[in-house]
Image (cartoon, rainbow, N blue to C red; front, side, top):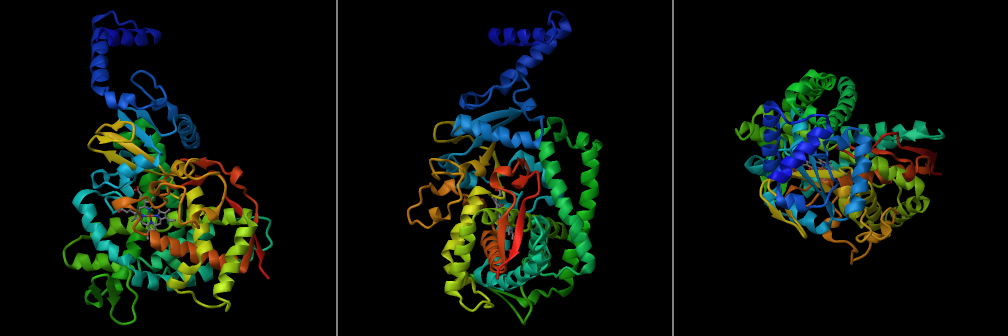
Length: 511
Ligand code: HEM
């Protein structure tokens, strides 16, 4: 006690504040009480950068999201297995060793999302990605059939068609010195999620909404990160008074309009008794294609979900289902542009299996393209669209070498797990062949682009099909030449693995 008091006094004096008067003594006592309650032996034993007295590491992140991205990488280099930080009163532990990742991700006890997800709640409310407990379990069960194999077979037809359109749209880029592919890919994935999971085709008017929606997604993700890094923005009241708070409000209004439009369009055609679900099989009467949204509309008719529930799931899937895949494809094209041999091998493999060029490919046939599969996996290892996930640890957990106390915000650094030298020799190198082996060099939880365990990505099979079809369609028509190189990319902290500058490639017609 005396030692703390002396410490507080030294700190106050070094800040020109002499705790000699009665008031100052009261402040001193209050700080001591706070300090005492704030201490936790298990947390203190975890290594991490030293922070300031009381403020801890809060000021470390004031330099913004780009600095934060690289600061985290510096810390993972220094501490090797895990490290701790304290931001305000939030105790944070970042893990990036596979054993600890398994402990957290595989256990239902730790499925509750971390504190910063609060900052995307105004947007996705308590949809599948954010909710927890019974609500999450119910929704997960309700929506899982939307990704059964025979539904994916129907989605595949739409994805194939949209890949063809993507290739047509890219035609005007041939011969240009460089192309920023982001906009093309975002259009492709947004149209695809609307037509598959939501069951609607965007008409001309909706396309204007969609354009604003894509910018809105970008702005809201960015705002969530800025709020996470700046302690004073954590208060909803203070945030609502800032310019960012006003921008978020305006953006949400616009995004809600787009989402409501999507729901209304499908509601008009929905008929409950069209859906037949039997075990692992789900079908639709007549020629209409079943969409994930139909399962929600059916649940609404049965009183299992209300209109707000439908809205939050549509918001969740529209975001989860388009920005992730577009980001992954953007980096994949950059990698292929920089790896000529990989492009050629993908095409060679395709031609060997399917000599007739205009053939539509079945899901079973797509699975035969092993080299393509390895390339997609390796792209997602190097550039996982979701670089970090967060959990709120509600009960203390024994990790490999430490104990993480209850109340900790746990960050699982997917980006760093994927670049561990001991798991992936030569980790920064694009080596698709490492996935060919029957004996991986890595622990199963060292490679988790779609997370793992009960809270893994519900859309992962969909995403892999989408990525493969788009890559095949593009590479069969064009050769990609390098412009942006991996070393040119400057990342920034975001919900997605975002580059601060456009990622360029050059398109050349394949003759
Ligand atoms: C390359 C593409 C994708 C990647 C890398 C990816 C990655 C992830 C990751 C890492 C998570 C766990 C997030 C967390 O725990 O905080 C997740 C969850 C989720 N993903 Fe994906 N995803 C992709 C595509 C998709 C698609 C296409 C959809 C929808 C069709 C989708 C829908 C979701 C949903 C709804 C969740 C929340 C699941 C739950 O909590 O039960 N994702 N995704």
